[in-house]
Amino acid sequence: MQAAFRKIGLVGRSQQSGLQEVIQQLLGLLQARGLEVMLEDRLGEVLPDYNQRLASRDEIGQETDLIVVVGGDGSLLSAARTLARYETPVLGINRGRLGFLTDITPDEMAQRIPEVLDGKFERESRFLLDADVRRDGHVMGRADALNDVVVNSGTSAQMIEFELYINDTFVYRQRADGLIVSTPTGSTAYSLSGGGPIMHPTLDAMLLVPMFPHALSSRPIVVDGDSEIRVDILDRNRIHPPVTCDGQVNMTARPGDSVYISKKPHRLTLLHPVDHSFYASCRDKLRWGDALVN
Image (cartoon, one colour):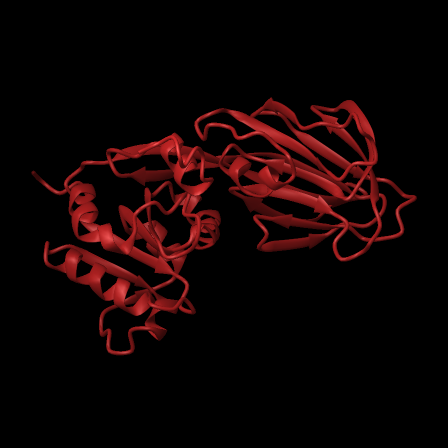
C-alpha cells in the first residue's frame, strides 16, 4: 500500500529519560521507508550525532504532513497549542504516565508506526480553547488550551469571588477556590479531580467545574461548545488570581479584570491506531472494573 505520509516531524521534550532510544528507533523505522524526517531543534540535545536539519515547532507544523510527539500527555498538550493552527495531524508515542492522548507505547512502535504510515489509522478532531485576560477593555494576556483553562486562587489559602456569564447571560456569583473550564479532551484531566463528568472527546461542549465552592448546591455545568464564557473577578478580592492553561501557561488577573474563554478556530487532528477505543482507554487508565474485564 502506498504511504499516506511523506514528510514526518518528530517533537518531544529533551529532558525525558529513555527518549534517545525511542527517537533512534523511530528514525530507523521512518528512514527505512525512505521518508524525510524533520527533528525538533530541542531534540538535538539527545542526539548529538544527528547531522540532518533541525527545525522549530512552527517550521515542522508548516512543512510536514504528519507530526509524531514523543512523551506523555503533557508533551502533546504543549505541542498541540503550537501545532493546531497548521492542521497537521498528530500521532502520540507515550513515554509518560496516563497516556490518554499519546496511546502508542514504545513496545508497539515497530507494529503501529508502519500501519499508520500505510494509512491504517483513525482520525479524530479535538477543539481547543482561547483565553483572554481583559482589563478596562484591553487584552492583558492571551493563551490557549487543549485540556482546560483554570481561574484559581493560586498559592493563597483564600477563596476568590467571581461572577460567571455564558453568552453575556448572568449565571451566578460564586465564592470558591476557582473555576475549571474544560474541553471534552480535558474532562479526564483536572476537571475529573474536581468532580466533573467524563465527556466523550467528540462532543461539541464545554464543561464548567467550580473548585471547592462555598455552596453545597454548586455543581458542574455542561454548555454548548460555541459558548463564550466570561469570568468577572470582583473588585472585593484581595488576591490576583492566576489563569492557567493546561497547567503549563500562566497569566495573572487582578480584581476588576475579566477572563474570556471561547472555542479556538483551529482544531487539533489526532491519529489513533485502527483498534483505538476511548472506553478501553478509560478502563485501562482509570482502572474501571479490573476484576470484571478479561
